Length: 233
Image (cartoon, rainbow, N blue to C red; front, top):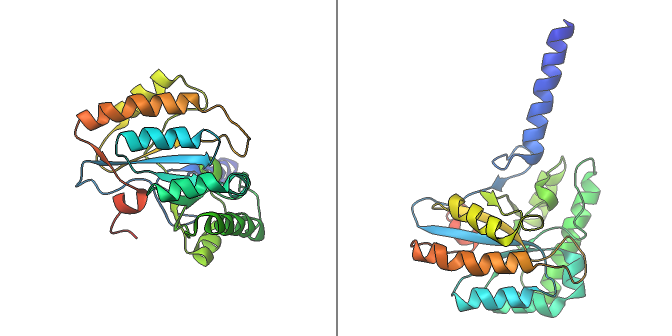
């Protein structure tokens, strides 16, 4: 009986881990991690912005004719509202990435709802757009998120591949995402570092600058998340 109980506990822990961190999991809230595979398209996404480095990223994207999705933190939006306006004006999609970028695990429903609501309000006030997409900080979901997303009309978005651009070199990030490229892929990068002011995002900038020509030469084009998952929303 002890062995059986231990086995059940391990299995339960495995299910919880998948629910919280699994990129394909929708157990705790509706979520997607890839788009349709019928188009040779990739969605670039950037988390944790806006930051002081975001305008340079916008220039790189513009140079290559690429649109992307930016999951922004409300606290950063309040600090740099004009950059959020620039992101929207350039035709990019803005998603909700919480207000202060906390881990949501072990948090109550009211805390989760407040984080999402404050970010939603900050983005709407700055850019006059209401996000339809939400990415949980660190990709960590929790109980109560389903209700919070429902109340704010949000669909969760994970990723097909994440470039570890806060840790790896730009060469490694570029090579990894090049190998991960496939129809419908959603790539996760960062134009901020949580809610840090003036973060160093040079690795991200150089990786994007190198990656885009490689993938364009391979015949890929780039879509916003809401387009690449169509007709999901």
